[in-house]
Length: 285
Image 1 (cartoon, rainbow, N blue to C red):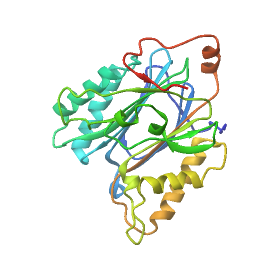
Image 2 (image 1 turned 180 degrees about the vertical axis):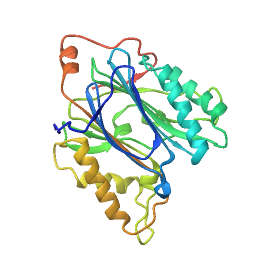
Image 3 (image 1 turned 90 degrees about the vertical axis):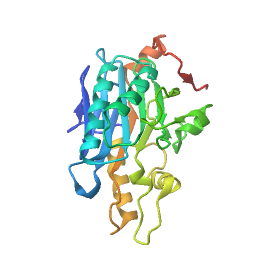
């Protein structure tokens, strides 16, 4: 499960990193090791896929956000700035309900020339190893459970799967976004992605699709997943193999997050826990 951390960016307390620019970067957050691959459409320097990672002022809560904006260029950049501002304002908050409401309103006010954006926002609490996720019309997340060694859809492991995905950002003022908590154990890995991945096509025009992506990640894993960096590079190589000489049709982004062993396990065993979770829904064991 462990990987060399040489060349990995480390987020400090109250730091926020990301944007809508081209990126290939490993990032270490408290209790997590992440890997981001963002390839804007047309080999440009920036696109409509926006990602941010942040750490709260005390290093206990990390947040990861991925948005797919219906647009490119200046409109997408304005969305990136709005997302950054709202995430910075809520860096210290574990509960995501107010954050999502503010994101929705900020999108309607600031996203000039953009109709909507899908987004998924995650919060990870180091003290308990719990993962809080909110889906605003975005694609389902893939989860590699270390205990079983199998990739599957995260939403299939929650009792609220039908409620997991709400409306995209920017459609209706006052939209309420559900949030769900799952236990994210050491070695567990999540894959976030945009529709540029699942809607990519091979040389004969066949679309990869959701099940095709699931097949790709399963074909790369037999048992424990060594680490998100090596796996991410292997997944991109397999994706390019599928696409062949076919043209890139959209922005493409992959984010891998793996839970690392450490202080969170100790605090959980000693009875430590999070506070002020709000209306989050918890997955029973």
